[in-house]
Image 1: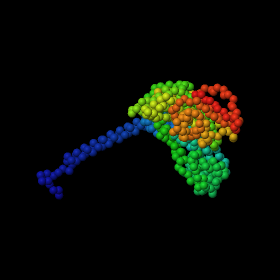
Image 2: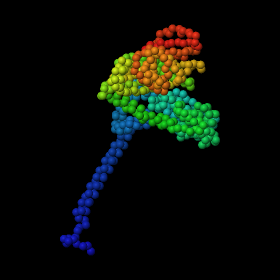
Image 3: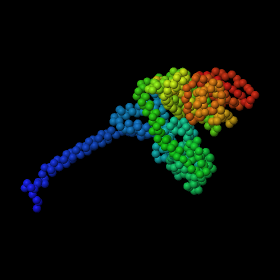
Image 4: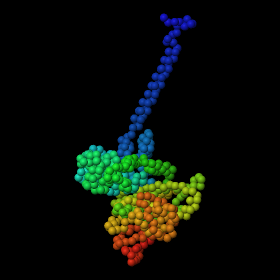
Length: 509
């Protein structure tokens, strides 16, 4: 029996407290229904904004390997087709080698690479060519400078070795990419010296879990160079061919290739280009004005040819400096070299962005000097069309000039420019500083200076020099040199009593 409260009345269990609880419950149900309705509306809107096929193909195929993560996220957030079309237009324009030009050679090149990949790399892979590892590499880096294909080597699975030089500033200057058919069938996949190892390339039973035996088989079947590449994709990395122990450097390279657009150097470059496009309405491009170029073909001790070049402005006023706080002055420039084949097909583009700030004291020392830049292009023997462009982002001005270059195939007894071989030069050292002379003043008279390393770039403020390059010959003519307009006829070389002819070629700026 229930006990009565002191007031004599029994409490109603379904009284006001329960009624208030019922009201709260009903309000919660209504609120929950409203949330569900809003979510369904959002989902419906998102479903309605699903990418059309042309936009989906553009994002997932056309630019899959060249778009940055930030750009992808921004594109997916767009809500109208008009905004997407505008985004695509801007995407290609900020990558246009000649901004504002009606033609975009970079865009054309990417679509040509996709078509080539589909035609060449899809056969036997079971997927479209652009989806394969070879297709991805070809679209990202372009055609290799050299390629070695080993289809029927004894005791080896089919493999391909691609060599690249100067492919992208964010990557090593020279490297290999190897592809192989795992177990001898299917598509060609990336080869990793660390993850796969030489034993995955060899077919012999004795090579199973034995890298030393696999290396011996590779060396006997394909040669020592292929055996070395199976341990490292970097030509300058030391390897232990006795034990076959490898580092992670090659895997870092492969990951960099796969994630190339998102590497800091490339991502920052795209962001800068996008920012400049939003703030710059026009840019003046001057053809053949105020820009001097010197090119010099050379060959290293391994027999690999290259083209060293020097770019030089003609006047100190050609480079603009922006005054900042604390009496500092900054500049922002870009040097770009586009290399075309004799058939006018773009091979690759070398591009370097340079920005720095200097003190007032430093400005006083260089204000009457001109800007110089030196670089190198890894080019095999052949004829090339080069387009040089120097862009000053501060004053929105670019200087553009072209050169027709021929790199002859040197005979076996030709001049070999090794890294430790001194080359006689005059004040060109102000323009081509080497690691050994960066701390030295520019010489006033010709002297011997070490050759600048070929894998680096250099800038230097200095006078506008006359360049004298001496070449000792042994009755051969591998000495192409160009600077500015065609050179005047060179007088006959004077003969000396020393071995060979000692000739001096004056090169005016």
